[in-house]
Amino acid sequence: MRILPDVKVPKFKFPKFRMKNMDNIGEVNVNYEELKKNNWRPTKEKNRVYEKTNYQTIKEVFDRSRKLFADKVFITEKFNPKGSFEEITYKQFADDVISLGTALTKKYSLKDDRIVIIGENTYHWYVSYMAMLCGVGIAVPVDKELPANELENVIRRAKATAVIYSSKKKDLIKDVKDNLPEVKYFIQMNSDSKLEGRDVGLNKLILQGKEMMKKGDRSFENIEIDPDIFKVLIFTSGTTSNSKGVMLSNRNLAENINAVSTYVYLDTNDRLFSVLPLHHTYEASIGFLLPMATGASIAVCQGLKYIVSNIQDTKPTAIIAVPLLIESLSKRINKTIEKSGKTGIVNSMIHITNALKNVGVDIKRKVFDEIYENLGGNLRIIVSAAAPIDPKVGKWIQDIGISFLQGYGLTETAPIAALTPEFEPKVGSAGKAVNCSELKIDKPNEKGEGEVLIKSTTLMIGYYEDEEATKSVIEYDAEGNRWFHSGDVGYMDEDGFLYITGRTKNVIVTQNGKNIYPEEIELLLSEIKEIKECMVYGKEVEGEKELIITARVIPNMEEIEAIHGKDLTEEQIYNAIWEQIKLTNRKLTSYKAIKKLEIKKDEFEKTSTQKIKRYAEIKKSKDE
Image 1 (tube, rainbow, N blue to C red):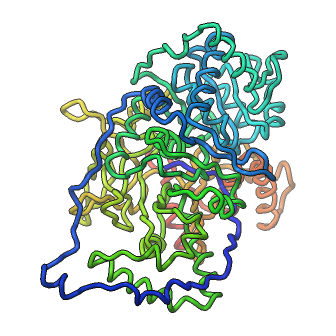
Image 2: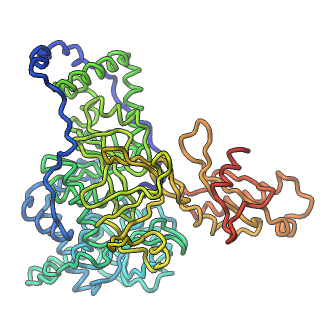
């Protein structure tokens, strides 16, 4: 899945663990003889599912939730860094959504227009996105880390007529505004400013919408949503003209809720911790729309360095995160346990509590109480998404009594295609097909591995203004069903669980789940006169978990000599190219920046159509 921007995970701090409850293990009495006499065996729940929901649009979800959960807390956020978390009810949220939608559609005439939303996870991001899904127009959520040139390109490609942005992005908007005369309005979140030129505050729009509603305007509430029309545009990589835009419908998003409902149970007692960026489908669908449908609440994280304190303050029951974050938390907890001199007893207690759980006695929450308290006290589910995770980490999470789930899908599947049922965990797998999807392995080899194909009602409408690219990834079977070529290689076990073993596409997946498309970086490198040909790839380095973004380059000696002079040493040629690459890196978000340069002396191995054989070149690099 396409989830996170490049992040530097801070060193989390936990107090010294005393593990005092472990001394009370003897208080638990288990009548093993009675269990044996009754021939008790642990039950397998392979065929168990929860009740399925049947939403067709997000507006249907919105209308039901605002009535059913009106007085329940929906979003809690710390608006003042030095203040406390403030709680916002479903009713307040719904009122703001409807008021904003009324103003945007009637007063500002933006009905059915494309509107870009950019900013960190914050209350008005949720309000803006929901207003779009409930009838304003087409939402274009974009990565808050985009530099000015990429943001400008996305706005222009999307044909956006308005941009809603957070206050932290004010300077960025100033940089692009003059180059975008086609944009009618620039709307700033958390601003009360009245309309001046093209600038207006979002709070002002909400107030204007409320006034219109007081006078009887119910036009926005009465908008009927076609579940299958184009409603969301997400660029899989927010930069050059060859990046793909994924078109999603209301039905695509609503089916995510229906899909998860049978595998994971959430209700009004649950609280999801929002740490992944909302511009991506996983957080927007599973971290936002799903809790809204179940009456759960959302706690908005202030930022990565506040994760532990925010978790302790808001006491979430579920966290959706990427492997890098989950691994960092588990490492830090285990390091603290080690420093406390409790590693031996913790490992012993894991063994004992696993044995007890196998005979129907679960005391993990009591035994590992201090770990739970440092994670807020209520945590019951951790979901890993976006990239592979070390199975040992997932096993450790299960061992201390927290359900460890994994999700699988892509932006093109909005995103859920497979998920681990909470009642049937299988650490190491990517989950099993959800109720609205079907998975199959195309042309499996002797190991059962092949490309993963997906048929699902969450499958995108297609790629934006790119019919050829759409046809290249979606094929129709004899019954007219659409099958999506995921580009992932994997196999399925006898229980239907999917295991991803590789990728057929060129995409580079970072440790924290962000996807990098080599072609877009190569396009920028092609503008460098000193480079004749190049290939960008993720280089595996021994001892490093993260792939190193590497440019494999054939120098353009003619240009190099014309610019830098003749008779240059290999080091001087390297430096001449590297200096230009560093300038190119400024045009890229940090996680896409090239970290390593390789000078290639011979020609690239190519196909008959003169395309570089990437995997052959990567193999050569490994051999070298």
